[in-house]
Image 1: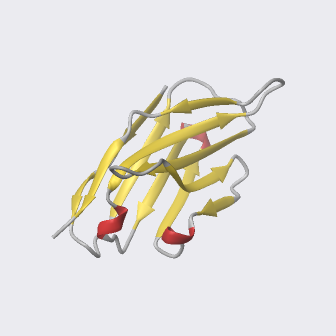
Image 2: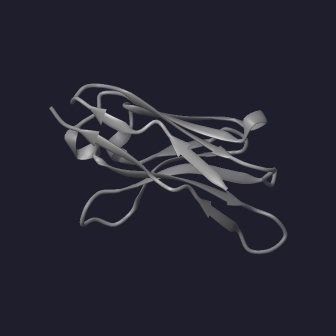
Image 3: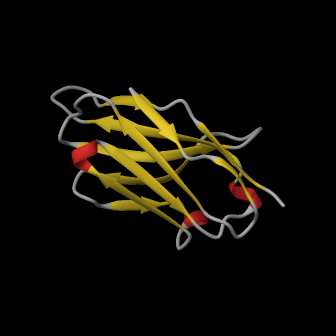
Length: 117
């Protein structure tokens, strides 16, 4: 189970930090990530980070967002700086675990981020 927190209302140019903690143990091979879905749009990848720290970002957030993780706490973070109105969306955390069979996906409940003056 994933529990996300940290969303809210912020002015353009502001910052927010999202957190998502996975309860219980997870496979050592995994990718933790953040997705977002704006009204009327499809869910899209924002950033993800592997269990060994490799990262990938959507072009729209490169240079502004930073994803990180604490493996001891099974927690992933998303530091969002220089926020823009177009970053407004519900943000979902995801963990994809790789074991012997097919990957296993888990999703958080979503946290609203609103960027507006």
